[in-house]
Length: 268
Image (cartoon, rainbow, N blue to C red; front, top):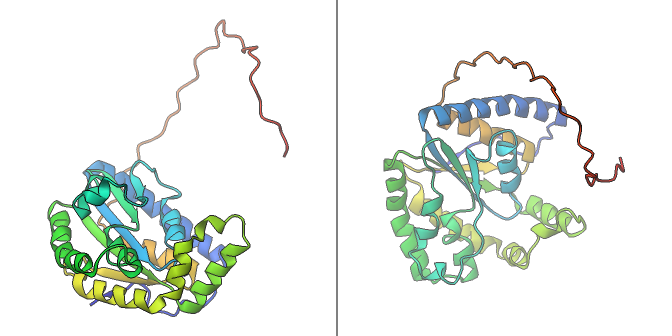
């Protein structure tokens, strides 16, 4: 059975100050997890899937904004190259799986085949069905290699998705998020629902279950997701060493450079 990360309705407003206070607390825990991952050689892979406008990017940003990008690596692959289309399907994803001391976050993943590719006809039904057949075995191999695998589906209501996509049209900061493909998906809501349901039935396993995040309320969705991740990846707080700043070396005969550096204009 697919589990819900947040069983409460997502419409209740959360004040920014409450959100930022709780996010700060969770960021501290994520730093502890990062230090533990490096110390212990922990390997984790976190997959984010969901409808366009469901908030995947914002959730990933909330997870990663206070940790090292070398430890928390985000993988967002572009469309496959001509060469990659001739490879075994999972081949382009395998090199991005974590080594010891890494937590890899997939902003969309191998599940493109079960969603985007299937709904838009970029792959045949036979290829999609074969993907659903072999993926549990592929994920079992990942888990057997000692990688913690977490899979999250962000679910947004049709009304909230429409509001978010429409808001991108007139916001020059967000217009890049609105593609022709997004508009096609917008019109095929129930095709996508059917593909999602079949994906869940085939790939929600004991070793790699799906967790659904209700994301109509972005702030609550982010906090709930981070809290859930921290509950699923075991870590310990390492003792902190005392920090001692050494004295700066003496200036000696050093003189400030008179090189004509190109300083940027001070407009603020």
